[in-house]
Image (cartoon, rainbow, N blue to C red; front, side, top):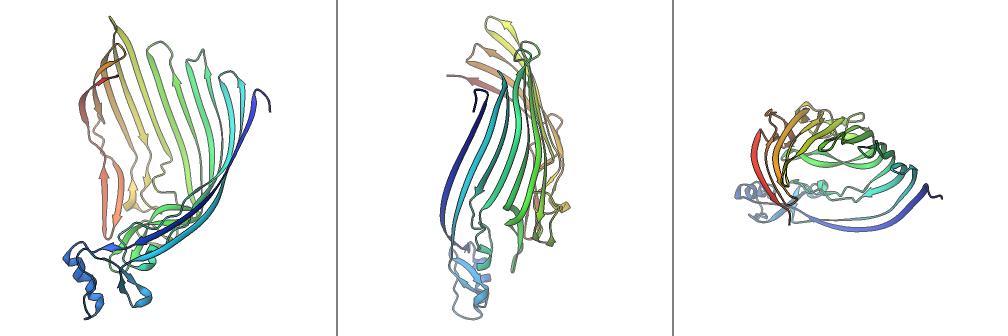
Amino acid sequence: MSSRLTAEGALRFTIDRRTFDSCALAVTDHFARFWNLFRRGRQPLTQVGDCYVLDPANDLQPVDNVHNKLNENSLSWRFGLNWTARPGLLVYANASRGYKAGTSPVAAVSTVNQYKPIGQESVLAYEAGLKGSFFDRRLHLAASGFYYDYRDKQLRSARLDPPFGPLEALASIPKSHVIGAEVQVIARPFDGLTLDTAATYTHSEIDRFVGYDGLTNFGNQSGTPFPFSPKWQSITNLDYEFPLGRGVRAFVGGSLTYRSGTYAGVGRRPALRIDPYTLIDLRAGVAIGERYRAWLWARNVTNEYYWTNVFSNANAVSRFVGQPATYGIALSQRM
């Protein structure tokens, strides 16, 4: 188009053919005895090491395998404009459509119907932003805004299993969207000092879905956020390096990480809440030439207690705790 304004585009057609063979494994004698109860006095069918799935269409009798097919096609595309406003300053805008392949549930379910494949998800994405250098390249800025329009998005939810109760599962969400913005600033106000900070704001929302939430409560889940989608995330690194003489340099630095609250499953269920947390890491060391480095490090120096994940299965809710205050020493050599 011109030396400063360029356009780009791409198309991709995908043919996806998948087959799935699924079953649950009788791993102990207790499980085998339990499933044989469904034989109702007839010859035992399930032994330790066998696969089994209950068939609701056949009076819940066990079958040794569930075979499914998933045949899908998709046409992905992308179109973008790039404008070089001046050397070192790029303004861009993109639109694209992409797909994520469908899948068959990989879970400890018990019935044939629960192994039904989930179709592919699609997203129509819009993004615009800029990247530039300022003040004789001592300041670098990247900022963008985005909007994602999803169809049939695969999200972490749950299903109600006849003998075992609530079990984790994927759900196909008919319509949902994400709107957000992100910015990164890298500043070097004087030699040796580097400030690198980045922040992301994300608002995710399920627009239409009637089904189970992350704890198998059935209802209208519209208006709830995506799992594992905090509104705010940020990380800041501050590093200072200075010479000690004869090719030896000292360096000190720290990192500040923040993540706002989110949920580990569809729906705003308090039991699946992951609270916000802030982490502080510190480091200090020496570098000899360009090959050798030695440093002391400390992670989560405030000993913040935080969760990284919440997992619900059957009647139990488990929370995974982040690493506590940790200290160490590291050595490295560049070949």
